Length: 426
Ligand code: PA5
Image (cartoon, rainbow, N blue to C red; front, side, top):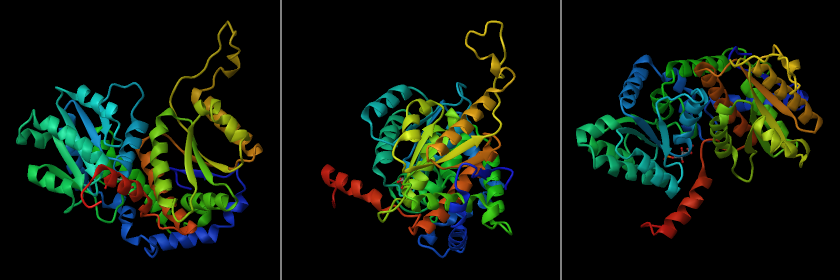
């Protein structure tokens, strides 16, 4: 397996997954051969390799300019913000007073946006508005509010230093506005869908603005791409194929819900990114695993009972981070709390024991699990993990028999909302 990622099936019926080895390899051939439905949207396969030093320089220069402001507001929804937020929140040290990043337009909560505008009043903040279509209502509304607020205080030249648009190369209302105002723009390639866009400027600009090393992130993705597509990456050596086979085998065995579990508090938004990737890619034509998540140990004391003992329609995918710096436990004269037996163990070792113990308990309770091990929470490891999940998602959806790269179901609420709001033409 790759040094950046291993997958372990000690707590699953490995034979069940292996029975789908040939199907997983066939789906992989469809994906990389660009022969399946949605093949026009496979540009993400090439994104890691396409990020040349020159392109990263341009993104980093804009990020430096953004960091000269007091804060950044990232405006986007779904795939146009979740990847960036996942990486930023995973890699930002808890409690550190880093460069403030706020998010807007991922919902239309009036209280949230009123409070955001109030919080930003008088501050010199930057905005990165991200929309591939350039017409999505939620980010459009949020950007309209922020643009009006900034335009009232800054002239056109100053606005160019503060507002950055990431959108289609030619079409959409955001492209028109950006061109008219002469804003610096970044392009979402035509053949890359939102939820597969982390390694495009959609993800990389806000991530760089947060101070994360985007070269290391991209390097991790490049290494994983080279590994997965390298010679001889048959089922037994390929974590993406094994993961895709595992989840399809579970689904065929009646397990309709996959729970992603992690033991690192910072991974909460990583869960959200993963849920969107799999939910929006696979939930169609009356099919698809429902992706859910838990943060453990926290949720062992809320959802733990259900997972151990509730209806047996779930399986689990556990993220295990091998090296996490932190305190070492010690003995003390007064052992009233009864914890001296932990002396000499690192907190991460204790946390990983909780992980192992939970896996064993869940297996005994009829819940099978895949365990994905990564060496640490570094940009390189995270880049590799993200790419592996994207690749496995393409393979898994083809095994399921759906087009991973469209989202026709998202239109239904929009059409109703436009009609109810009185939008012309609806
Ligand atoms: O993954 C996707 O394609 C979606 O989640 C989109 O990213 C989301 O709907 C936002 O679309 P847009 O970038 O066009 O505003």
